[in-house]
Amino acid sequence: MSSRPTPVIAIIGGGLSGSLVAAQLLRQSGHPLIIKIIERNPRFLHRGIAYSTDASSHLLNVPAGNMSVFPDDPEHFLRWGQSRQEKLVETPWVTAITASSFISRRGYGEYIASVVQEAEKASHPEVKLEIIRDEVVGLQPSETGATLSLQSGNRIYAEKVILAVGNFPAADPPVSDKTCLNNAQYVSNPWSEESKIGWDKIESCLIVGTGLTMVDWVLNLHASNFLGKIHVISRRGLLPKAHAQAAKLPLWLNYKEQPLSIRSIVRQFRKLMAAPEPYQDNWRGLIDALRPYTPDIWQALPLPEQRRFLRHLRSYWDNHRHRLSPITAASLKEIENSGQLQYHTGRVENFEFSKENVAVTIRARGKQERKTLIVDRVINCTGTECDYRKLQHPLVTGLLAKGWAQPDAISFGLSVAANGALIDEAGHKSSIIYTLGPPQKGTLWETTAVPEIRGQAFHLAKHLLNALAMESLKTGELLTH
Ligand SMILES: Cc1cc2nc3c(=O)[nH]c(=O)nc-3n(C[C@H](O)[C@H](O)[C@H](O)COP(=O)(O)OP(=O)(O)OC[C@H]3O[C@@H](n4cnc5c(N)ncnc54)[C@H](O)[C@@H]3O)c2cc1C
Image 1: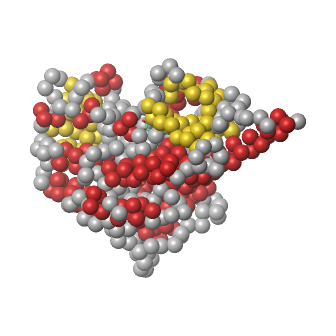
Image 2: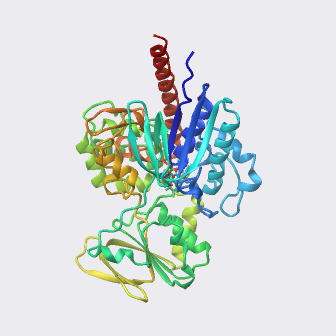
Image 3: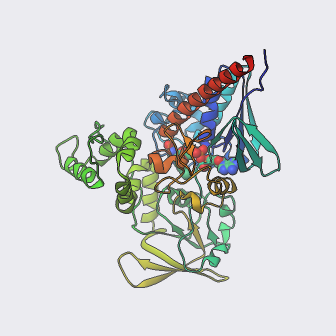
């Protein structure tokens, strides 16, 4: 009998996606296996960007009843939360742990870490998890696996590789003089540790973008007793809507019927909004009814229709679909009513930095004239960068340059097969490199939140373990013949 080395699955990125797929591999594998998570930022291990925040005001934007990480155990998070009630209840933000409660993202980070720990404890004795603190800067595939190059100079060989590299900070605003963006008064990455420094000397700021990261920043500044003026600007001035009670509705779109177009979807949506109860004005119910089918609907849309959605509807979809907890929305309104927070609608055209402050040139939406806003600091909260060709990420740049990966058709992530396998420049499906979560955005559209990532993690682990078993069988047969 031949003894083959234990197969290795390398997971690049230890945020939510990397941790969930590791937990699934630990739970599902009945054979010897080494799982290696390589995470470059220790603060992000099992938390990633979303769940590494310390602020108790940063709440989940999905109720606890839908935040289990296990698709086959929908109440898992709720039970976990209820068993830690005394730690997770933090008034005024979290007053109870029920299915409809919005719990802190910090608490959710602890949940993810505990899920991995539990899975490790209960795993097959020959299934091992290793955590490596390093950055993967390159990847060289071979016929049977891939060799990863790490920032430290070390190398790792793995039979299968999972890119769980997640969300990337936003691109900078398209100002005419890009060199000015190197100035310390400009915060390019709102999730960096440096962005939190030096606020005691600041009297006013401008946040560019009106999405959920803007909300995080406003609440953080308020909680840290920042008394200065907070200006916020976005092109359309659309703010995230709030969660509220809404009647549940059935799927109302027959997306299998062709031709499917954005125009026809909007027409049906408007018709239902005008229909009697429970449809009448129930936009939350209508959007939530599409949620489990959004990836299928997205894939049923022809490419020109996907592009039409991005041009005309995306901002409206985003601010209705990614909603705030009621207390978050109320707190934001309170800060606005106090006069501290002021919204602007328009485009940032230029920044002029001086020793004292930043002069921001703004062109109001639909107008020719410009106005100048004088602030002490500017924070870029314009959303995550999804165009992988624009990223400064050595691993991704290398994969694209060598043609082992390619952007998807709308450049919102990487081109992937239904099982998460990367599709290379020549159109071949990889049997070695896979991904899940945010890199699949262009292919699936709805893929960045827990309810989608938990299912992907389950299926990807299952697929990889089956593939390793098949490959091991083949090698065994070759050795015995
Ligand atoms: C601020 C915020 C709040 C959110 N709130 C919610 C919510 O309430 N509910 C919900 O369902 N969803 C929420 N989401 C969405 C969702 O949970 C995230 O998209 C999800 O956490 C993505 O996880 P990830 O592991 O794929 O990515 P990330 O969290 O971005 O993690 C990727 C990790 O990979 C590491 N990495 C990247 N490249 C390398 C490399 N080359 N080598 C080593 N390590 C590397 C990074 O350091 C990082 O830790 C939120 C997202 C954000 C950004």
